[in-house]
Amino acid sequence: MKPWLHVVGIGEDGLEGLAPATRAVVEAAEVIVGGERHHDLARDPGAERISWPSPFDALTGKLEALRGRRVVVLASGDPLWYSVGAKLGRAFAPGEIVYHPHVGAFQLAAARLGWSMADVETLTVHGRPVEQMIAFIQPDQRLLILTTGAETPGQIARFLTDRGFGQSRMVVLANMGGPKEARFEGLAESWDMEVPPFNTLAVECIASPDAALLPRVPGLADDLFRHDGTMTKQEVRAVTVAKLMPMRGALLWDVGCGCGSVAIEWMRAARYTRAIGIEPRADRRAMAAENALALGVPGLKLIDGAAPEALDGLPAPDAIFIGGGLSGETFAACWLALRPLGRLVANAVTIESEAALTALYREHKGDLVKIEASRLEPLGRMSGWKPLRPVVQWSLVKR
Image (cartoon, rainbow, N blue to C red; front, side):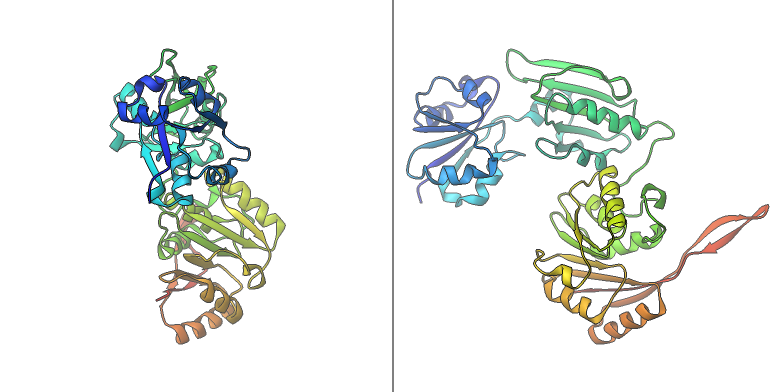
């Protein structure tokens, strides 16, 4: 198969910054596709010009109609790093595409700051909810963030300040590698700068003594969640999420998600994890949505309904958590939908649900444990242990 689609990374230095072979590809193109900024950076070639379509998802169809012509898609920096290249790679066969990478914003920003790329978290909030960066706010963490626009640094400064990281150093780098390159520096708690809309943000997270500590490992404090008292408690939640085994890109069904604590911890634990919470009560879905936003996983999807009926038509999960209301019918529907090597975890707190869970364990095996924990609380002028409600947990892997 002969390639016809070239995806070319371009920088602020335009055609002059391209390798000779890559520049020859652009100059020989019959059609060039890109944003207004990209076309401005590659003015010379006399090819037909096409702008990004709206909606952007229409791009692959537009390119498909150009098959057989010499087509170049222009992208900023490295087309395969938070850019259009990944989208095109899913739509077209590898033999149809040639990628021409350029030095990207992350590499340029790291070079300007003297930061080792191996020691930073690289994120994008471009065209995505800005709140997703909250999950990465941790002491002494360095972040490089592709922003959505001029307002993004201010939004992130507020997130940092609200969580006790107001002393964090922020650097906005704009138009890197070109004649209009600019740099803006300040602290999160006093950030008030106007910056160009196309920029990259670097954050050096500095925690105050009272900063909120939100690790990526499961087991966040209960009071970090808005809830009505019915939730999987911190100690049990840590064990539950560990048994669900969050992995990059994996999908969780949280059946009866309540305030969303398990689904949220799952999504925080690994990059690009996804979760669908099934919950019949509107007030609890509202709490779950609020918690997801506050804890940096705005992508949590919430479904109004009860199992097993609400499970019909959902994408096949890699893991399922059943926090309450376990029945033979719900288990059967979940087990049928679960992908091979999928993990299922069910918790029981009542005698009736424990009996149903035990019966299923006898038939399907797996691991059955009872989790008991106590918390120290004041007892008059002294202290004593207050036991949490015991939880029986059944977990198994689909082979």
